[in-house]
Image 1 (cartoon, each protein chain N blue to C red):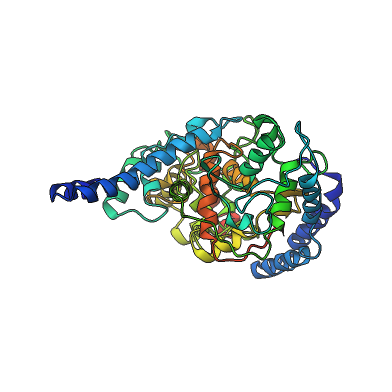
Image 2 (cartoon, chains in turn yellow, purple):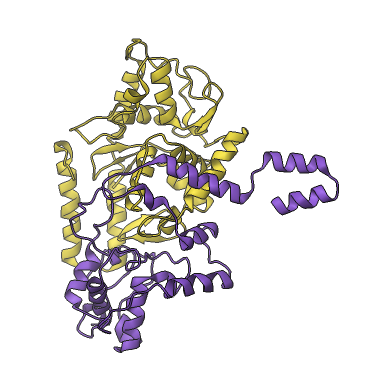
Length: 274
Length: 208
């Protein structure tokens, strides 16, 4: 894995922490307690704020061949309304005649308002710390931060929104690849872990709410702000599937399924995770 | 859904038939469309080709039951089919070197598009199971396997079962969360034997 210089210290601290754990050979419950303490310590000061600030500045700045800002981008609540928009996405957009998640909608606005080509708007969706910054993750950080504390209320009134949910549910249980994995293999039961990493149960309301409302997140181990598109992409990599295409229909259907299941909970991201 | 639609048309409620069938696709139609959309939403990358989205019969049936245990008759059929697919060791020996087995159980790399296709391929048993008590970083998706051999007996029946289970878990528990390591050619025969040793050798830390 590539290492970003700015976050070596944090990673070193984590490595030292893990070594300390192994050396003292805590029992399992002590290990879990220590990890809970480490996670609590992370909550003081979230570097996601840097992405939020950069995203907001870029959002308001004239950019692209048309040299206009994204200030008039319609995220579903009308042109220019960012506050609370993410808590109602993915949703059906009449101008595109399809259901879009946040990232797909940002691409749409970059093409329609700023004059980028589709390919240019889609390239480099996931950054790599200080080595390669991604504009998309900064936009995502800014827009999602404007829904912090807002109750999730993802619509299911349009037939295409309902279809996206139904397809997303099927995809959640789609078993394939060399390991027979589906999403539910890891996210179908309460209180499970991979190694020491707790896994949310996305098949019940409370689990789906807690998990979905805490993405995007700043990943300490990667020194990077990670979007929900990235979350899905990397899950499928670990499932031994081929690569999920950024902004693909399957990614939007799955996001719709998970976002609707989180309805009713207060959105609480960008968060910070291990 | 289709059956119900036909029944409605038979009793003459043509309007209900039209409304019911025109707006709501059947479950099978949704499944077929989901598989189709999946195919169009992934790119082949590295060693992971799009053929990994082609489901075999077991994957298809288990998808249908949404991670829940299928009915008894369906489960028995899946288990029978998969049992017949197990290739048992030609030399009749089910066990190998537990020290190698421990390394294979720890190794998380293999088969991901981000992995070197020529690099190591492990089973990553600790991701889901507790095995050697020295390893505290273990997952809980599968049952703990600490003292597997000690409890089940250091004999050929136990070893054959462990070999078969690692080779093809679907032969013993339909729609199990566990991969079919041998059947899918993730692990070699020798690697599976080494894992059997980790589980069933009296000297293995699993049984100490």
